[in-house]
Length: 192
Image (cartoon, rainbow, N blue to C red):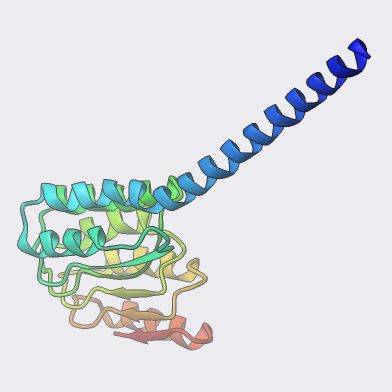
């Protein structure tokens, strides 16, 4: 009888330990899943705030309002007139959010930012994730060098549905390449 009580005690202890471990794992994984998007989006919020730019401050405030379970976000920085360092900082933060498993960037715009130019586009195409569905870079001072880099990126962006790049300094040849890309890809609207 003594051995039977001991066996029951050991069995109940083992079951209890596994149950407690399982409950803790479920609780921890749920907590991590809920905190994950917001935790990683903080990289971008901090970068936006570091610019001390009113347009970026508004964008950071919108990102702060994301719900815990939000799996995507939009980033619109129209008329921000950021300098090269600020553009690089934001581009790296976008990449960090993507690499660390944060929410997916869907719609992105830096339209009406004439300081973006080729340098900014080259920085962005290195960091924009493949989740992007819309790009707005209207009147950003982009020439053929930036346009060609954007074309290469867009050709490999499977979810891209809208690419708006009018009022830049593209040659007719580069404009024709944008038009060709729009015709070759189903469901991709290119405005150049």
